[in-house]
Length: 450
Image (cartoon, rainbow, N blue to C red; front, side, top):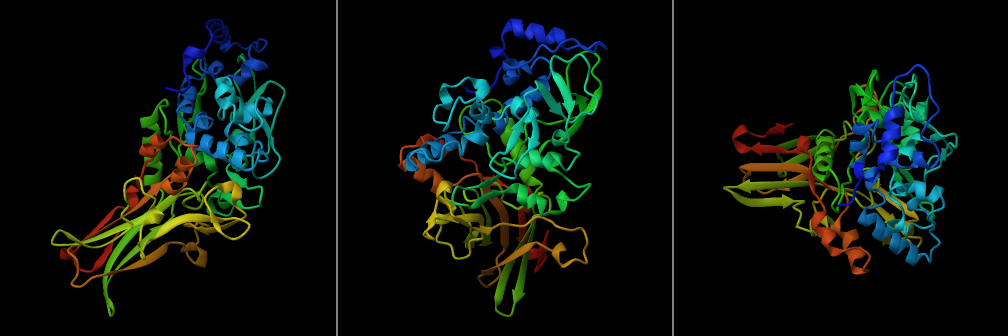
């Protein structure tokens, strides 16, 4: 099983760090500098909770992800290496900054501290010098930055406060947004999570930067040492949508955290009505609680859709969005399918699957909230779709919104070119969003179920 473990920490280094983790008023010379700061295992003795959470995160997994590895391998081949560090600059940024890789093809050969998005990479950032494709500037002063304005004295590394690391500050979203906004070499803005957040209600003063949703706060200790004060600490598992697909630490906890986040994202409503033209089902989805559009991120690869099924005397009389196992949802011959995703197109206008070919984007997402003022027309941003149901009225109608972090049309393409192991197809999850699971029954009459 790949992943991070305290077993990788040399005993001598561990003892030195633990001894330096004190609450003395006299600040000794830092024991962690230079190369030692690069290794997340050197954070473990004092920051065990944060290390555990991070080690099961997609940040820790970013350099191991087989879909990333397959797409990067194919991209380098198809561009004759011209794509360079386009992917790996975000998936293993320390390796790029240290000059250990130029294209990410040798990540498996590199030391663990150079793969993934590490403690050092985020906490040494002192400036954001752009809006996309990882324009983060790393300090060279051996100082790790965080969200506490009064760091403990006597720490084994130099520490300072930064608004970029304080989830209470709007500025902190820029740190996340630097990688979570991607523009292709052809100019297509294929990932827009930060831009979407900037245009939402959540970016306004006093609202919710990224960390307020993706790094839950709790009362605890930033460092597990004697004399450490109680702080407002934050979850470093940073759940979102993607999950580990190969053996990795804390996989079950990771999927549970993703499910919990998705369950609280949308609001759903199902109405069954008698109309002059027949019986209709109306499905409404409201992106009420995401701080960005839904789905977001690599939306050209993600699939979110509505499944609706009508029954009469136990038999299915109408269905839409019923997914087949290991089949892309786009393969359904379903004229009523409500599918949320982005489409990407090459320079010739033809649809493509691979992001590096994208020159333009056609988006179909649920937009984020932009105002709390109900008198503002923009307050109402939910979307309703209508489905024709057969007469006489069904006995029962069910609905749910479903989501795959990545779907099989892309994955099948990568398998076909030999870049992805077909065994990965068995690991792709389909999430059901609990807040959208609704059931209407005829004995309650024509009505809405919320």
